[in-house]
Image (tube, rainbow, N blue to C red; front, side):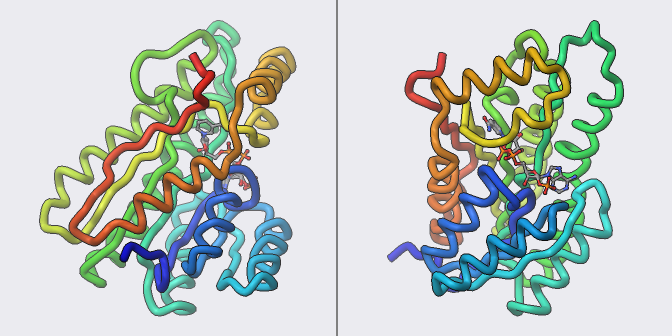
Length: 247
Ligand SMILES: NC(=O)c1ccc[n+]([C@@H]2O[C@H](COP(=O)([O-])OP(=O)(O)OC[C@H]3O[C@@H](n4cnc5c(N)ncnc54)[C@H](OP(=O)(O)O)[C@@H]3O)[C@@H](O)[C@H]2O)c1
């Protein structure tokens, strides 16, 4: 019988969108969830809501660009629940723009949050996973990180491709059965991701596209749950979740 009962799962970027949906679904299915994001009042309110529905949840303020914040998230999770079974590296931003706009601040921010943030998660979780003898790293990548790229997406896609490469590296270094890795790549999902887009034209286009073809973040949450609930000797390596209508 596959189950999420007793799983202890920490999730970054859990103040909205895919992270929030994942926390709510996993908690309903029996996991204890630890929500992390910069907006503390939002993760506090979601955790409170989960507890009122009978679930187990805690919340912490975490900026994934700060390695120490991730270390504190992992140690607080272990202090509270005894261990950490899964870290979901979900936090991400997408201030996309044409390269010719030279939005170097946006490029740096994407590298810092999407790539360095994920690496900070790896650095925080791996020692705990090794000490426990088991652990599962899940990262939310993107279909933009699966192959080529398209106009405005170059740096975002580069960070997501890099995250996928790190996952593959970790997988090849983890054949002793201790660490499982899963990279989940969503297509258009209806979330607030467009809010991080500085260019108003691109932001509006993305919002319109999300409204027209996007699917619920619960679809990604179900994929994360599927990967987590597998027996310890089964690794779901890569999952793509896109709207049926997406090109
Ligand atoms: N929506 C899509 O169509 C889509 C498609 C492919 C991939 N994705 C990926 O899915 C993931 C989740 O995005 P979403 O669509 O759910 O967007 P979202 O609703 O904007 O959620 C992004 C989350 O990331 C958090 N975050 C941003 N910067 C952070 C930082 N420095 N430290 C900690 N948390 C941070 C935000 O929380 P705070 O602002 O409170 O910190 C928020 O909870 C991202 O990695 C994104 O690239 C989304």
